[in-house]
Image (cartoon, rainbow, N blue to C red; front, side, top):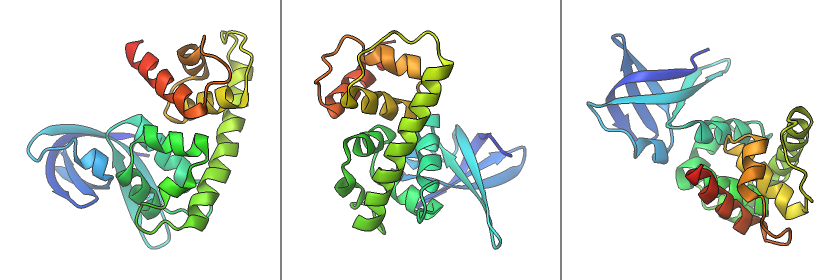
Length: 198
């Protein structure tokens, strides 16, 4: 498995970047957001995911772990392939994606080319459940989490922050002290601001 690539950017095209490492150019399918961070002739590091199918082996590269985590979650949804995941993440940041899932805003996902209402609804439905399960398993393994009266909006906000790669304790700490009746999207925004300060 190729975990990451670090080298010179030699080519950038729509949804493709070539990173040269040790004389070998690795073509990585990627998002518009990641492409915006790359410059031909400069060194870059991409976190990667390798998709192996009967007819092709493709490498996908992302500027940060948050985007890679969102990509992996998207392709875990039935009916969503790597191309659709790239399309969605090209149109929004990982933070915006997590906000859409947590707040049940499937309409925003349909702005991505090739994503219809049916698929967008399925993404929100499947990932909301998956995030909640991951949240519960992390709570069991993390003894440092302070006791919090968890409302739906609080648990959804914690789950959304965890999708972006933060631990349960980091996410909980980031929104600690906020009123339990605060809307989910407001909690996520406040949490991201606090995590940036930490």
